[in-house]
Length: 230
Length: 230
DNA sequence: GTTGATTTGTGTTGTTTAGCACAAGAAGCT
DNA sequence: AGCTTCTTGTGCTAAACAACACAAATCAAC
Image 1 (spheres, protein in one colour):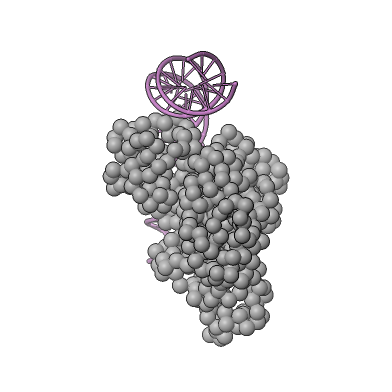
Image 2 (cartoon, rainbow over the protein chains, first blue to last red):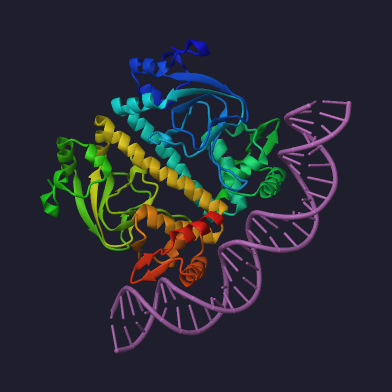
């Protein structure tokens, strides 16, 4: 029990990822003994590309981005994760992490020892199946994203990004998102200036409405139409 | 034992993917009883996007492409797999397959019942770990590919493609590859005409040499330089 | 062997997107 | 509170790439 961080034990945590529901009480207790709960401020790096893979993260609160640091002056953001998600599964059996994770807003993260996690996979088949399922959802999003990047023009790609946030990250037509145009550009493979122009048009045309840190999509069908046309 | 196809039982097969080495003899026998071995000719579709997910494929001989069928007149090729690889892991827990698989040259495929495969994951932790590891390698290739697609110009992307074939598919500086310029375009997110022009330049500059169905890369460092510059 | 379809290749033009320069407003730091 | 840096936004230009038209070569089908 990590009393020092004042966190509830895993057994009693209400913020579980689906895979944790496959664990026995005993496995949850063991997990609780090899994790720490840490708070990160907006902008702080949680996992650094090139560092040793030593833990798997569970996001209790907040929003993070998973990105590749590149030689150029543009990172490439692969995904965003909100509360209740596991982060770091693509490097579960690696020695070195090949991507970075950073807080997009203030976050609370459970950091679980990677050895403990690997043992859970070995010992609990249902848990392993759920982990594979989670990784595969991410993989299939990557597949769709590659089609977006290569076969759609910039309007379609920015539409895809907002559909992603609404349907897959926040599961809501209205959501709190406080990222810069540069971060949106890094996520969609566009230049910052292109995001600025097209987002201004989306606002003007009422496709996307921004208010006090919240985005809203009044008519998802119109946005999907733009996504479909490319 | 699938005597009808004349195939060796899995227990005695010399063409195993690494994960199969984690199975017990008993598990190999069970696997052998729920698989069929099928021959495909170049161009034939092995798995069709939108069909039910019913089996996991193991490629004994040949080369296949895994691709997304899109609304436009360009598919998007995600990966190529050669002999000894498992195909279909991204849809292991799906009902419907979200991509297609086709033979790039004549192939021999072992088709394993997906239920049997799921049971192996549930019962054998080492097998499950190896499956996760395999999926993650594919995921990380997708990550690198997205950087290539968004941050490099066409020369760098075509260089990336040849590096991929040499280092990751064939593990050799010289390899047999018989794909059209259109297939290379579908793999790199370029137009066919652009692949034709740039490949002609690569041939002229001696970066890539083509002879009787074989490609050779005389100087990998020069190609990596082109990849790095983008 | 012939015919039709497809692929490869060249030249030119049009479209899409990024980059540059500049200005105004907002945010962060001291 | 003031200064510096960053973000957002506009106008214009250049670069990268796709598209179109056409021809020659190769492949597949009959």
